[in-house]
Length: 244
Image 1 (spheres, rainbow, N blue to C red):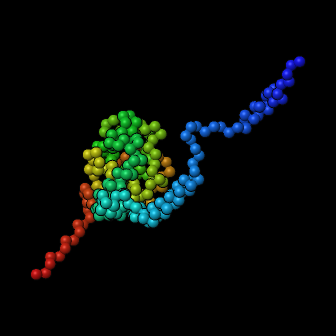
Image 2: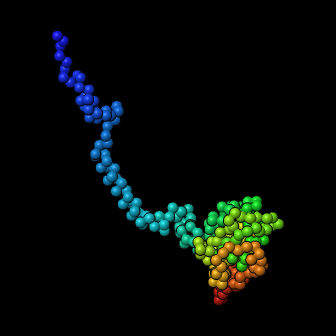
Image 3: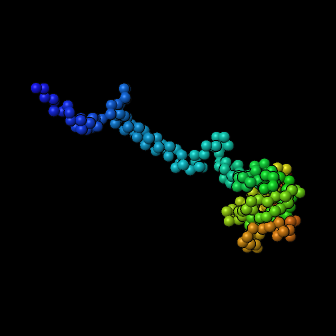
């Protein structure tokens, strides 16, 4: 007669269930993070955050300006207070236009050279240095179809898209002034008033073609040119000599 087996030795299901209930062993030298350490971390984060908020004035750029020491204070961003406020209208338009040109550079390239056959160059282009009205109309409503620039043919897929709805009159004026005075180009600046005048007069709903724009090839929008090449604004009056 064989000895009776232990009652648990053959109950495999019960054994497996017990194993599954066991917690996984921690790796050697590994212990859960103590509660006191977590408490100290959160306390430190709260104190540091409150001090940071206090000394930065609530994250105001004018207060937490990282360029204060470098630039002597003020807002170094285009259009901000500080050094930009002292620039003449032409220099300020060039500074802001350089930033705004980012929306154009993807096609016309950062150097204004364009891409052969597709995106015409802006550097040395007669379309850029020619009449200001044609240039404003193009950026306002776009351009589609084949065109000739510097004796070469271009046909942008889908055409140049209009920027009139996406950019203000001032933004367009800045970018156009920048384009007309970069990469060797030199021409009069385009002002916000010039862009607004064309906008008020032209309510076109479709893109232009080269043929449509021929009447405006050499036509300039009237208006005072405050600074830069061809400035028409009267120079500031000189200070009166001191009385002797």
